[in-house]
Image (cartoon, rainbow, N blue to C red):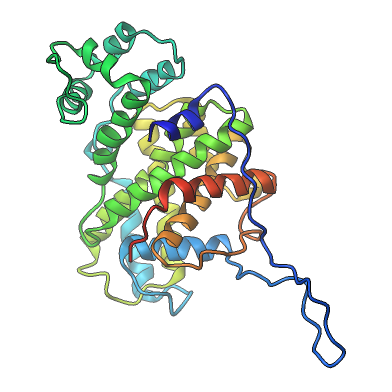
Length: 348
């Protein structure tokens, strides 16, 4: 984990990985009596809409789609869902530590002193509790007892403190926002958030974005999806009913609007909220660098998560799904990093 953080947030840029070939070329010449062999073996292609549909069904535990158009019942449910979303109480969302963006920015400086970091952590009781709890665990336990927050912060170090912030603060925050009709939704959304944040940090680095703002955008970008899952629980007694692709598209658009509202409620950095605003627009109308980073990272994270759970083939063609915001080598390297860090084992 520490090496992963250093590769993403370190001052030096890691050497680019050599990407595997996207197609297999034939080298044996065809004999006269044989049918000519094509130069390349085409990979199965999936569009952005197809990947999004499969991801949303995976999060909600729904079967594959059978119809695209909304039924009259779905239209009525969607109307009711929009009404509920307009009255959605943002204060019901789990609280985001107000000091988190400033702390993440301070962690960007590897020379930041323990006193400075401890002072920032000490402004939030939740973060103090998590830091002290983690450093008292067997893994971090030292010969001398930890008697102060500064000792705990120094013991963790920069990489350990980043891990505490993501694994022990952001994870329960995001998972608590989902539930109801899809008990596993919170787990699935966190798995996506990890991958999306990792990809955002990598692509943000090559785009000139602030790496920590990019990471924060990725990890909070689908907060609204959890909120929609909760609202659906008030309308649907069960998800074991046919659901059209059109209904899920409308739910995803509503989730993006709620994610933006949550970002504003949490007073996230302006660049993060601007990127989420871009998420409400078609890909061709995305104006900000971080918005482009977030769009592509969300797609790569969805695809990688679906691969990890055997919902799509390991090798697919994403050319039609990804706009030309990044070069093929940059995208291939990012996908290799996601596979390396998050594909240790496959779950069904």
